[in-house]
Image (cartoon, rainbow, N blue to C red; front, side, top):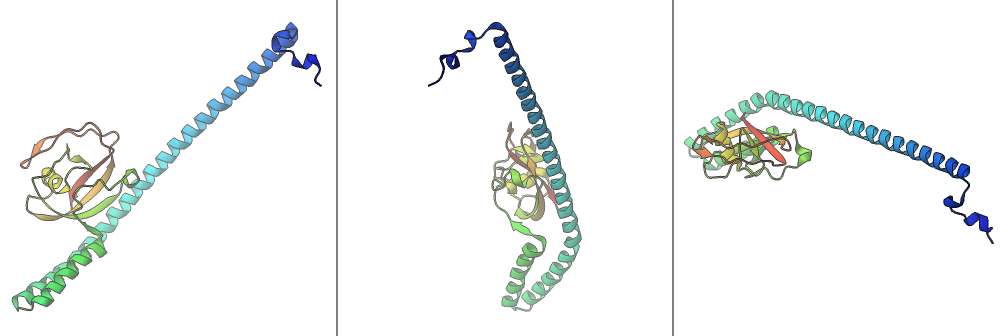
Length: 214
C-alpha cells in the first residue's frame, strides 16, 4: 500500500520544494516551447525550399518542352506538308481512298510526333499538379462559349472562344495553340471585349491558362 505522503499534492509541499518544482516545470515548458518554435521554423523553411525547388523544376520542364516543340515542329511540318501534297494529288486523281488514308495518317502523326491533342472544350481536367505544364491543342475558333479573364483565362473557360478572344485564332479558323497551365491562386481574372467576344470578371479560380499560336 502506498504511503500517505505519496498522495500529497503540490499545494501540500513545503514552500522551497514547491518553488523547485515550479522552476523545473517552467524550464521544461520553455525548452519545449523553444523546440516547438524551432521545429516549426525548420518545417516552414523546408516547405519554402521544396516550393522553390518545385517551381524551378516546373520552369525547367516547361523550357525543355518548349525547346523540344521548337526543334520538332519544322521537321514534323515538313513531313505533314509533303503528305498533304500527296493527299491533294491523290484526290485530284480520283483516288479518294488513298487520299483519306493519308489525311487520317496526318492527323495521327500530329498527335504522335508533336503531342497534339484535340480540343477538350474546357481545361478543367487539369489540376495543381499540372501547373507549369504546356500542351499543344488543335482548336477551331468559336464565339459562342463563356470566357472569364483576359490573356489569362479560368480553366472552365471555353478554349475555342478563349483563343479567339486572345487573338491567336480567328472564329471559324482551325489552329494549333500552345496552352500553359498556370497557378490561379494569385491571379485575378478581368473581363474585356475583344474580337466579338465579351469575357467576364472572376475573382479567383484555382487553375488558369494562357494561350499562344504555334
